[in-house]
Image 1 (cartoon, rainbow, N blue to C red):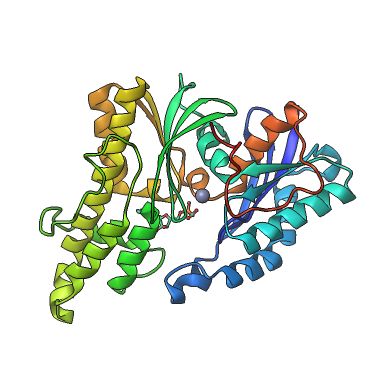
Image 2 (image 1 turned 60 degrees about the horizontal axis):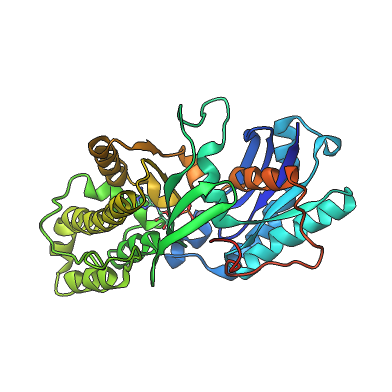
Length: 344
Ligand code: KG4
Ligand code: ZN
């Protein structure tokens, strides 16, 4: 049975995992930086990479201990090398390469998005892929950094159907929350406030719904959010926050699900995955489940620990490469964007 140590540092979470066999997560240890970035209302790249540097080696030790493994039982080191914040990726890549070199192991570079797409296949004591889950499936990878809709045909064959042309869905949540003085990460606060709000009090745009393509745009929504807040006194704002959040959130959910539904019809696919931090959104989950019931889809939403950025998903993608003998060259480095060859 193959076993891999995996590292993820593409944004602001430092994560190290030990993954074996059929995606069995033996340990996944993460250090989150939400508190460090909260005063700025978003991720500050320099702070993120400095924190990765401090957290990474202790996390490697902790993950090995938690998995109860030694280096002699590890057959490769996988690491996210793209896309992401360059300084953050660099910390993970340099660490992975150095560990691989000193332990005489292969290193395997993994595209972060591929990790998200494969997250439903992970398993541990409390989670297993849904019964009957199989390829092909549609996957919405939605987070603070990306909004992608993929057709996952099989392992290694990912067809990008659509992506955001400007802001990511999570970024829209975060920026709107920041405008209202709610905390970071904003999506969590908007979700919470929206529970007691009305979805129809404020009219927010649903961009690109009439177009045939499957791309997304959220910058118009952000501007509309800003406009809705202008002219509100502090008192009016605090009264309106739940309704603002519910109306804003509904616009995002409408767009995400409309594109998903369109893709389902276009490609005749009946399995759907939500992944990435925004898939934690309670309204999105609820409405995606209703849509799945209405359309006869199988909906898979991996547990939050595998939806948000984590090294286990990178380990699984790396493990598949390791099995095929696909190792990375020593001179390969990090890159802020995906390679043209990563997706169809
Ligand atoms: O996957 P993730 O942890 O990191 C990135 O790769 O960005 O996603 C973080 C994003 C943030 O934008 C955050 O506001 C959003 O996920 N998020 C949510 C919720 N929980 C986290 N958005 C909407 N509703 C939520 N409950
Ligand atoms: Zn991500």
